[in-house]
Length: 79
Image 1 (tube, rainbow, N blue to C red):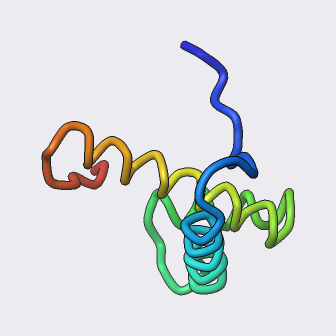
Image 2 (spheres, helix red, strand yellow):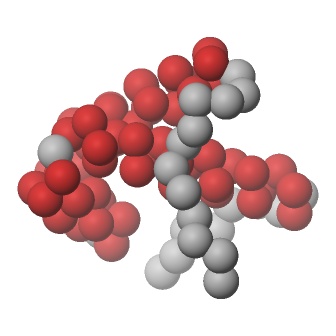
């Protein structure tokens, strides 16, 4: 499996900005929810800080969106 990197500064600046803003919002409200993904976000926030956590969430959301669009299927959250 190849090593996955973070969000680069290449590509659409506006789309990257929207993903980061969305990531910041998800990190901000992660403590109000108790599921697998939000627990991962809370742990990441404690270890790395809010900005790095927001970029990690944005990266994950971008990968999910890409997979949904390329496979032309609806999103199925992990149980």
